[in-house]
Image 1 (cartoon, rainbow, N blue to C red):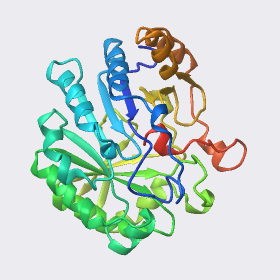
Image 2: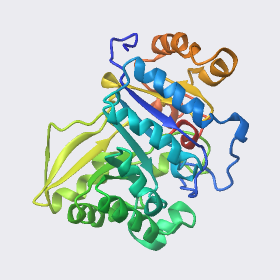
Image 3: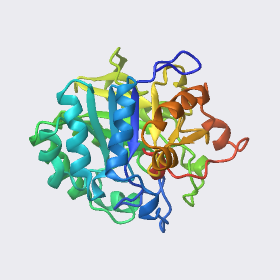
Image 4: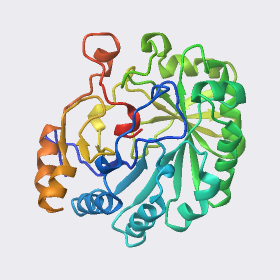
Length: 328
């Protein structure tokens, strides 16, 4: 699939639920209202839509949320889509998770061809972790990461950069990841949804956030690329691969290769725009064959660039939908 700017689209991110057992302050408000169950895509609808995308050339699928593992039928979703990796129809099935349920799910993920996952972990300090997540326990996440590693799954840690909150936590995180053999990616905050915070105060560029590392270690760019937007560097002598996802400070839209399927069945062509097509309505009213026509429309609607900078600094409205609906 090619969009209107000639970019090859081969990556689909699926938000399987808007629910989460954490309440991270940069992601959602403390008292969230979640979607009624009848508005969510069913297991069968998720898999049928995913299979149509695969038939059109999608080679990588990432399951996200909310927290994807809180969905009761997730084992079935993972099993069905994992078969597509086994048959060669998919190159990769991956998952982004907060890690708290990995002790229960790690073996199931590994058996069903999930070979690597991203775990969101912003700080190792138990008290500050509880603060940013509004009550979660970092020990549960670390135990989950250990279970995934034991199951043979490669783990990448995603650390959201938050000014004056976890800047001093970067070096301990770098050293933890290096010791455990995990990659680390630093992610800039994005202005999505009303979370009750002043985003201008909390935002910090990834380059500013990682600057103190150069006082302790040698940082050098490397050519490694994943299916996502991260740029990578080596941190020596730790042997750590550090990624930077920089939607505000260093635009990466020219290479965008992805579409996003939301919890309620909408395809968003860009995380930073409201343009979308509604697959749920089409599938329920016309059958899964309607996906093909809407896919063509979605590709034409995909914008050249996001508008996060304009949203952050007030020249465009902040998107009303929260990250947990669109998929992190």
